[in-house]
Structure formats: C-alpha cells, structure tokens
Image 1: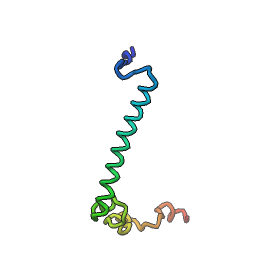
Image 2: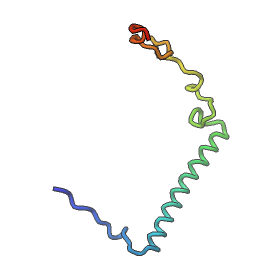
Image 3: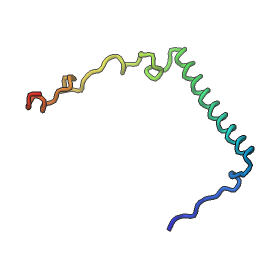
Image 4: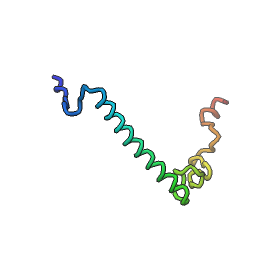
Length: 85
C-alpha cells in the first residue's frame, strides 16, 4: 500500500504572480549564499589561506605524485610482464 501524498496547501498557489515572486526570492537567496561563499574563498586565497583547496598549487598533495609501495608508477602490471605486453 502506498503512503498518501503530502499536500501542503500553504505552499501551493495558483496565482502566477505569487509563484514568480516566490521563485525570485528563492533565486535571490541562493545567489546571496553563493556570492558569500565565493567572497570567503577569495578572501582566504588573498590572505594566503586555503592550501590546495584554493587552487594555487601550494598544497603538499600537489608537490609530486608518488606511486604506491611495490609499484613503479609506469602503468605496467605483472600480467604485462608475463604475457610480453
């Protein structure tokens, strides 16, 4: 048996002008959130904070790739060697 669908009559309006205003308010709120996040990221990068997350290449992870222990990092496997590839 399927649960009944939830109808929130307070949120549903048939007035297109009200729907437009609601949509504009949601977009404005999301834009403000994104703009604030971008400002915080840019401010952190300007202050020398952020490391690898800021994309400036200063993170220790980006210093150089090291293959896992027991591997050479050239992409060859034991099967390549066994079958002569």
